[in-house]
Amino acid sequence: RLLAFGCGEAGRLGLGDQRDRTTPSSVPLGEAVAMAAAGGAHSLATTAGGRVYAFGDGRQGQLGVEPPGHATAMSATGHRCCVLPAWVEALAAISPRAVACGGDFSLVVAHDGSLYSFGANSFGQLGLGCAPDQRAPCRE
Image (tube, rainbow, N blue to C red):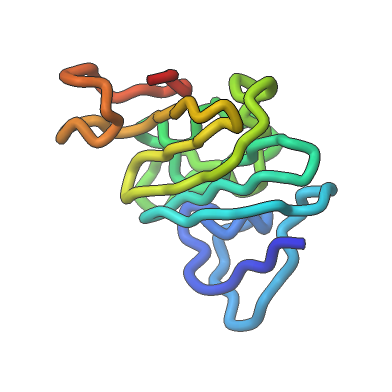
């Protein structure tokens, strides 16, 4: 299981709201968690079944998915955020080996060694050369 606590702004804890938590709370994934990573205001989690989930602030595409309506809320700064884990369906076939989050971007390494990146790319942090921000996972 995945436990989350701390600042809940923009849904970054994946607990269904934007409240801060001072004690650990279980993130509702419904599957055994394999690994997780936290960025500036978003998080990724993978399950033992090979799914990648994202939650929190996705303004620059760092979630890799447009969250379903029931999982979204408006943040304090007036943008839509994902308050519950959303499955990144674009990564359904990759069998993730590692995940990492930067301030506004995400990286996922597949078992075959290929790298998928998404989110902000203003400084080339996605490794795509001079490509713009990416709202969906891009394979290197």
